[in-house]
Length: 450
Image (tube, rainbow, N blue to C red; front, side):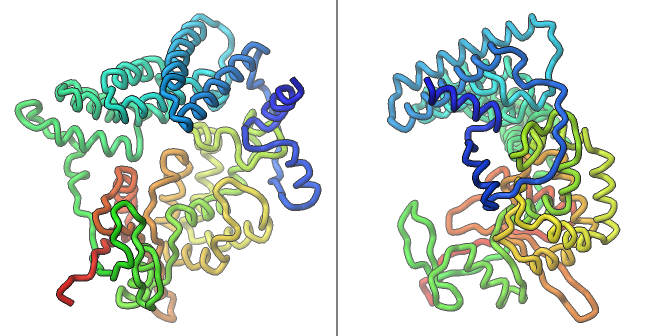
């Protein structure tokens, strides 16, 4: 009973399952520092005690689901999925009949329906793995009909289209993909995947009209091909090569060595999106921690509650655009230095103080340029959750001459037999639209003739 009470107190205070009361000690010892911001609360997350109890019950079901998957207990997995389905349908009916004032939309992640939809999403993966496509289709249709907003709709729609094709229902699969393309909640890689499915499935005689996005998807993505001497050739194992310096390295490190040498004298880092998330956090610090109602509930947050929702941009549009205007006007480096000096070591979502030096961050900003940087940061501000993953592996930069000429390049590295994911493809198209130099670096095995 005491453990359950402590668990409830911690979850109510920290609003997540990751932090506990040791956070107070870490702050007192100076080991962790949280940002300064104002807590302004007008809506409670849990309006009534029953709301909290229902949320806790949903979390327990999710925990049972995770444990059952770890233990390969398929009977319990099915029971958790069935219970979640029942609760989801029942609770949404009750919600529809309620006339109470709606809380902010970004509170939805604290609702039992959000948790149950997550459990059912896991259930779909199990059904697909066992080739129980009829069960997967039924569950996905329930999710799409009951949960009408949220980022998961993209994943659900894509899986529904794929599973319908598995069941030999191509016309329904195509219609599902076409509906997903125009769903405002279907974004990033999921939208690109659905668009590509429409082009593949929607050929005559099923469809005669070519979609307006066809030419955009068919654009050529620049490629560069390099060779590497493999250390291992095991199927399913991570590729290990001998680098240009003769040392063992991964495929991304091999590509970095290529770009630094015969690839053009580039400096660079393998960080995927990490360096961009750090730059975003530093340049948008005052925006992230500005005073907005209901987004800060304790002094132990590293980001506002609406950070990964559409509300983040909507509630701060003027402030965000003001920052972006300064960045576009060439003030980004000055803003970066100021933010670094004021906040170094303070915890902020996405900011990694140890991964990149100030010198590297300044070089990146100088080489990317204000216009392209502002476009990229606006893209993240509009939809951080959908676009925080899948960025190209390498960010490269070089200074051309003493007069200040500089340029940047992004490269997605693929080893033998690797393919672009739909999220990676979506990012490459976005970066191309923004005017970035972006390419795919394909690493193949050294020819046996050599």
